[in-house]
Every structure is written in C-alpha cells, then in structure tokens.
Length: 267
Image 1 (cartoon, rainbow, N blue to C red):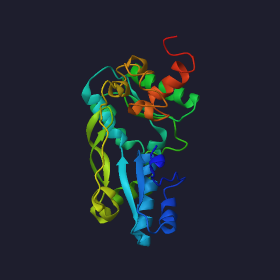
Image 2 (image 1 turned 90 degrees about the vertical axis):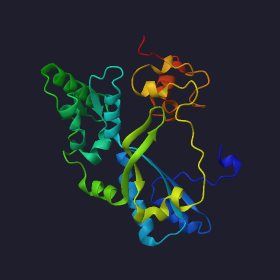
Image 3 (image 1 turned 30 degrees about the horizontal axis):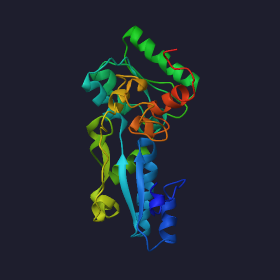
Image 4 (image 1 turned 60 degrees about the vertical axis):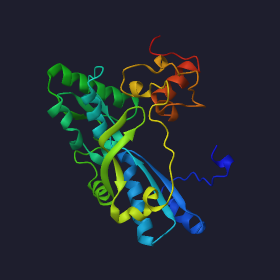
C-alpha cells in the first residue's frame, strides 16, 4: 500500500544489505526497520557498527526491539488467568541462555523449559514442565541443548550491551512494559531516525476499538472469542497484533481453522 503511494521500499534478506543500498542511493535517506526479539538484535547491532565504521551518513534505524524475559514477568505480575508454566523460545535462548529466566522458579515458583521447534521437541518440553509440577522442583529446563548453552552467546550479548540501552517500551495489545525494549546508545544517536531527523511518526493505537489481542496474547480468551475475529479482522485486513504476523495466534487460528474449514481445539 505504501509503495502505491510512492514510497521507496526494499525487502532485504539481511540487515547488512542497507550498506550496499546506501551506496547505491547516496542521495536518499535509508531507514531500516529494526524489529525483532533477542534472536535478531545481535545481527542488527553488527549492522549499526558497520554503518558507523564506514562513516555512512544516509543510513538510519527505526528501532522497535522487544525483550522476552520482562514480558514473562509482566504476564505473571498481571495475575490474570492461570499460567501453569512457560515453554521458552529456542532461538531467543540461543542468544541469552538460561540465566535470564531464573527469576521464574526463584521468584514465582513456576516451571519453564526451553524448547526446539518440531513436534517431538515441543512435547519433550511439555513433559519436562509436567515433571516439574509433579515434583514441585521448579527449574529452567532445557530440552534444546543442541544449540542453547547455559550462558547463551556471550559475543552477541556483549554487542547488544555495546550498541543499545534498555528502556521501557509499549507492546501492542498489552501496553507499556518496564525495561522491555531497547534504544540506540547516545554514541549511535546519529543513526536513530527518531532523534536524527525532524520527522513525526503516527503511532497506531495500542488497543484498536473492539480488538482483544491483549487478552488473546495473555491466554485469557481464544481468538474466535474476539468480536472482530473473522469479520473486520482477517489475514488480508488485520486489525490487531495477533493477526498481523503469520506467527500470530489469531492468524494461525484463522488459517487452519476458520477460513480453511479445518479443525479447532473445540472439535
């Protein structure tokens, strides 16, 4: 839609491609949308450092990173619904390791387990969580040892600390979560589009009227219980965060149940 209005947009395979784009279009200001959890942050850090090292003046970053552990704490602090345990994200854990999750068993006495992505790996993590609940011996389990180390990736962690400061950040459908986002350090402020250029960003509402994504994300309702689901909110015209991403719970529920005529959990 933006392209039809004249916007110059490139879909790239790796963030480092912005360096070549900046050289190809020296007269343009290149803005890279820096999104993602810990999994992608380190790669974008390398891009910021590469831009800084080459002295490029026409590359900027719109930063919208999110951190997983503070979000888990926020879900528990809300004390809504009932959380039996957490299946922890594998690729995020490759970067941060097991240690940032230790507050789960120590402070909240809740089981958790780092999982891989295929069916057997997810079932193994669920079995680990059930065993913890059965024995009341709560730990940070890890059934993804092939790639997740206890201390994670120290090189990536050091790079993130070098380039970013931790800050409070807003999550669509939930609100502001303390210490859950990142912003470029002052040393790299020249590349922060929100600080370097005189622009005004129109931010979408965190809670579009009628949207229940916050409750879906917290497991309080099923996607089909949202009044917008399958009506004004579809995969082609998403309203909330859960339908925007192909990995979102509403998008999956819509694709494999509602629109395809497939089975849902109710069946």
